[in-house]
Length: 408
Image 1: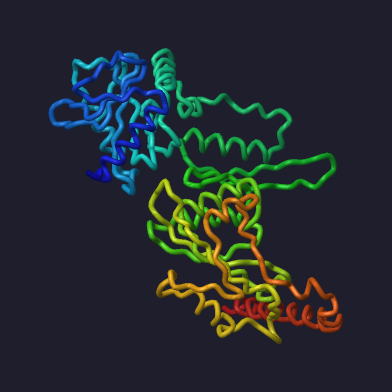
Image 2 (image 1 turned 45 degrees about the vertical axis):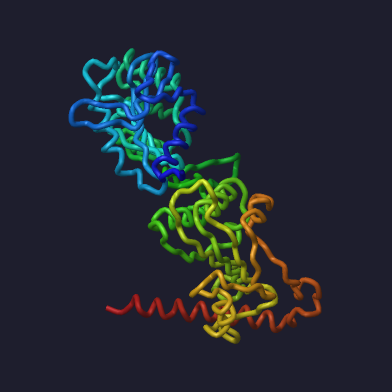
């Protein structure tokens, strides 16, 4: 007999709790002293509070609850239900703190956690259930010294020692500390570094709990932001430079998560010569956001090479709609499953992509004639003329903008 989605989720949660060091028991066989950490299924709460999917015991005392939901359920609003359960434990049940401080919401694929010991407690994503020892330590620290959580300590930071700091640095650090004291979960951090006589350089790093990776790369952050604001099954087509396709570190992390969590189905390699900045190498990345899943959503990424051996300029040979007709036909918007391989359009499986160095999507297969035969390059006067043409086109556009700005 096949399991229901709810039963499959609980089966997965059982395994995750066991991996974290919890003994999982049924309520009719419960022995809360069987181990340091015991999770009791379907525990009956006080009158009017129903049943907790799992009640967590550490050293024989109730400390938390787990609310189980089927895969795909949005967990953000479930924390209210979990906190209600934490308040409904029977009076006779031993517990060091009431309401129970540790609340989890899990589908087996995604897990969120709320620590009610924290000021302005709010749920956050976690990669695994905490161990019984971790919860015990947090409880003991709080009982020994109230307001000992990290969030609480951030609100009691000592004054900044300003010795050796410039005024701008003092302002930046104090603004960041104020943001932490106020419990803000997102911060824009501006860091300045100097090395000997080098000119001061600044790097901008975005820190957001809904981003897969923290980076100063604005293009990677823009990709993460677009993904974060898409609703489930929402579709996106985003222009990205080549470095988004091959950059290591945070770039690799983001690409792997994007391929796993979204259906990344199409990549259009754009030609150069279509932007004002000469030599800009850009792409259009098409993907659909999906619900959380253990299996990757991307099955096949189709790449259309519209760059190799293509030559466009802003005036003499500008990109036109009809130049994209072949791509549109290959894209097959009405049914992507009917796509066919062509000279410029090729499929790459998920397994092929993640096995590539740094999960790079910077893929070409056509022979670039301009690289193989220097004789094919235009004459120097032609190249110079094209540069002048592009610059003049840009100046014309700026002249129009300036004229508009002068209008009353």
